[in-house]
Amino acid sequence: MNEFNWTCPYCSNHQTVVSAKFDTSTVRLYVGDTADGNCVGVKITSIGCSNTSCKNVTIDVSYGNLTQSQLTHDHILSRATLTAPIKPESRARALPQCIPAPIANDYSEACRISNLSPKASATLARRCLQGMLRDFCGIIKPTLHQEINDLKKQFDEGHAPKGVSEESFEAIEAIRKIGNIGAHMEKDINVIVDVEPDEAELLLSLVENLFDDWYIARQKRQDRLARVTASVEEKEVIRKGPSE
Image (cartoon, rainbow, N blue to C red; front, top):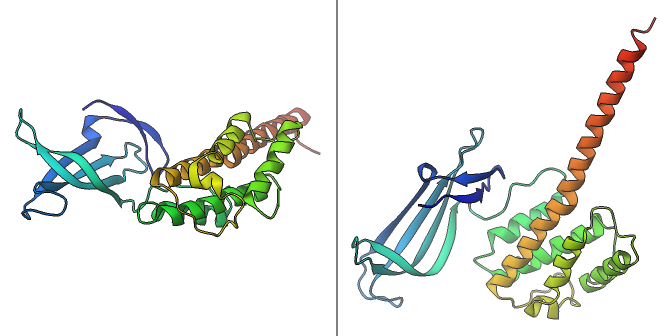
């Protein structure tokens, strides 16, 4: 197999997956002719985390039509009609404590049901986005659409909250141009609207990017400042010497 980059969903450690940490196997299901075809099966993909403090295994299962390799005669999954995470049970990232608990909980639930109900997942993801605009940016308006407009106004006038980069704002704006998500921005945040599965995934990816760009980046800045401040204070104590 070719090595590839991967982020562990348990510890969020970025790593390169090598053959010793990757396994895939395909099993044909001998159940005769089915509504999905006469040759169906499952593909099991497993990745072991290389982080020695984690070592968790991630497992995904895909179901669909199989074909047989003319070279090896092994069965190959040619078209997956269903893919589901087995371990962990969802694609949700492990989040640090700097993410507010209500937003983190909505995100985790959105990831858990993303395959089962994309439109319900998208609703929770929209709640995450609104929650971040209100918590991080301090913008509270009747609708998500109005809150994004207010952020745009602040951004254009040069006084958007610290940490709101041009890239993160452009990503938010891009979401407003996507299908039903953008078409229903004026609706109440809890109204469930029809979306395509890929639209729900795009919303979740946006939420994760904003976690990184806003909350986690801010926490890192605060941690660096705290280390510098502590170092300066320590040096000042040494300079003054022991107090009498």
